[in-house]
Image (cartoon, rainbow, N blue to C red; front, side):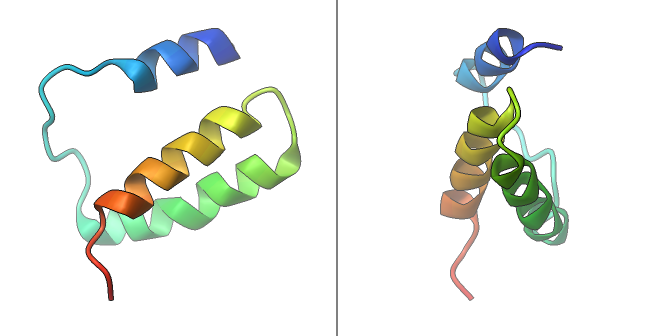
Length: 60
């Protein structure tokens, strides 16, 4: 999957469904941030997705 396809997927504003538990989302954030730090073609997508997930998680 290329970067354009990933942007299309995260830009889809269809009906939201809970796909992850809070624990899964918290575990996913560091992985996405690590990908974002790698600087490859998907880094911007990983950074955007990490930000979206972080904003939706309740503050600890």
